[in-house]
Length: 345
Picture (tube, rainbow, N blue to C red):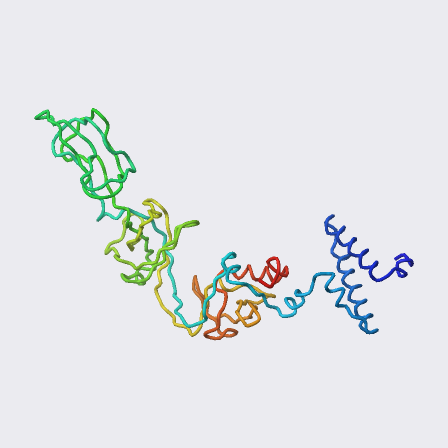
């Protein structure tokens, strides 16, 4: 280094190092220079402290007061508004039940107890069509007008109940026989989730067991129970059938969709458990973020048994403590970078 550098004032040295550090940062260079800058600052502070000099003025100029507490305390303070913004949810640690699960493939089907066919009472010719595929209809709504082949008088085909037209097989001028299905109307407010039971699981799957139905990204999870287990095995697939009636008020579950059903075949009560979404890796060990008087702090934990949704906590967390149950990664990121724009939220 140029010997003239050592004759510069401390303030000039700081300004020079700051300019160089910014240059390195904007050009994508190594962080070694910035670390060197920090090292010189600490060395100068130690030298000045030895001579009884104060750094209050410099701390105020640099604008870093407040961040020292954040780093040394190892905690993050967040207001309820910030937690809501980042999707952070809290819960109290307590006992629960882990479930040993069997995962079965399946498909969403029509609830056959809520499907009906609109048919003509007489042989006739289609004169006019009033409803189309996917139309929502009410019981008694006019679907089509036909002319009787015998009397040549018009007669009507009406909706048998409230629902959606899911099948449509009619064209103008078509001659149809009495009883022919012209429209299929289904009430889609409930559907069936039919799961395939493998032979190895025949002894485990029973009516009344809790089931969690999932269908992939963007779909909600439905929780219900097995309503029906078929007494026979499909001769082609050699699998059994377990059926769950799925509430479908928003019509998100559509017949024909492939699904998975996680059936809870055994229950294991534990003294303390947390959702998997609460656990993340901090410095190579599993941890949860616990709310304390100083803020949110990572707490290493020892994990015991687990299922697809929860893990047992053997050590590191006490019953009744408030912890982050969802999206703790945001707080971990907060600790890594200093703040969501400032740790005093």
